[in-house]
Length: 531
Ligand SMILES: *[C@@H]1O[C@H](CO)[C@@H](O)[C@H](O)[C@H]1NC(C)=O
Ligand SMILES: *[C@@H]1O[C@H](CO)[C@@H](O)[C@H](O)[C@H]1NC(C)=O
Ligand SMILES: *[C@@H]1O[C@H](CO)[C@@H](O)[C@H](O)[C@H]1NC(C)=O
Ligand SMILES: *[C@@H]1O[C@H](CO)[C@@H](O)[C@H](O)[C@H]1NC(C)=O
Ligand SMILES: *[C@@H]1O[C@H](CO)[C@@H](O)[C@H](O)[C@H]1NC(C)=O
Image (cartoon, rainbow, N blue to C red; front, side):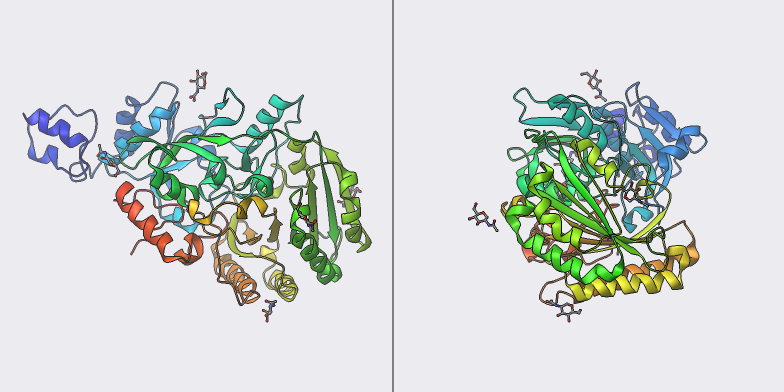
């Protein structure tokens, strides 16, 4: 009888079983908050070890692997990791979460460690590392693929490209959670160093979005584990309410072990890309031209562009420079005339190439080996979305960059990033069809104040990013501020992140109550904030 009661308690988080019952019951592991308060990580390690598959590994801070597994892209306010459980099978995620739930141990699911938000800094517990879950299975009819939660961009790009093609270079590249899509295929996160899934749970912008919509628009099915360890399938037919929520606010609801995405024919063998570097005197004319390009919606469906402000003293010793990249999904000849005005503007450097898609990202100077993908730096970010560039504002942001770099030379590694992936596929979807709330943000703006961790610089970095965001928002007085969830620090207003229409937050919060009543998923831009 005692034993029965206690076994039941194993699945019911807060019953103080051990305290009440003698002799000791036959629970496979811990029992409750009260009785397990003194649980040490050594005990967790021992108890979890027998619950997960043989291909799994548990690492504590004493292990050599620990440092690498907990190294993050974002060093600003990192989570405190006590133990890393690297799961060998999808089922293990449920085993670990059930255990964590029963023992009131916090868990955080990590793939490539690219999350930016401040909320991560409140975490203290077990990192569930899904990095070994990398299987990709293309469906029989080639219209969809199943991706495990640990797949990452470059792996996916290469894998899919090779299935439709000969070979592609195993180069990697890219920016942080910019997302991106691939030809044969599906939307994917643009940064090969970035996981596939994380960006998609927040919508997921990408290179093919003009044709096919966001990553989340292409999700057909999500295999997930709820906060109490229950495994569920989420799709239009199974938990459709959660399917709605997880495509835009997905980080708040469940741990994803695998997901099915639509695939598309790969398209042209080569893409054309051209990168210009301009000195700042060209700024106004450049943004006038870009506004023209972005207004021609039909054309941008095949030509996307993005650019940066950053310091490159090879081109300008006194001011940051402006780099602009164009990528066209097709042959050079199609776009030469459209790019001629940019050539005529007088760039200080131009590079171009016709290359297979997997080589595009490294070719644009955003490779894994480039600083943009390097782990261990602080990235104090701020973001805004807009529809056309306000040229006055773009100048203000630039001059602000100059002033801040002079005042804080240690912050001069900062980037201002401006992205235009085209909008046709994004606006074509019913905005109510998912929790992604900002389909009318055509341009993504982000500042990333980058520096080696140094607490004495934090306040200045935060202030710089905030001021830049305020300038962008003042530059569009008729629109409300928006925060693409993957690009901000997460301390912006919930409405700016998850949508201003009151029904959106109401629906999200009611689903949160139903699926994660104890707010276990609260470390990535939480819907329910700590008091
Ligand atoms: C990946 O697929 C192979 C072949 O089906 C299987 O043996 C292996 O266990 C899978 N790996 C994971 C992590 O699920
Ligand atoms: C866009 O496409 C539509 C339909 O194909 C066409 O009528 C229109 O002229 C195009 N606009 C531009 C700017 O090319
Ligand atoms: C300028 O462009 C050329 C190609 O046109 C490239 O080889 C060179 O590395 C560039 N210079 C710098 C400093 O990036
Ligand atoms: C551009 O930004 C300026 C300065 O913030 C603002 O006064 C102006 O109204 C903006 N222009 C438009 C077209 O929104
Ligand atoms: C787990 O949570 C879900 C969603 O809140 C709930 O429907 C289910 O009954 C729970 N399962 C157990 C075993 O408590």
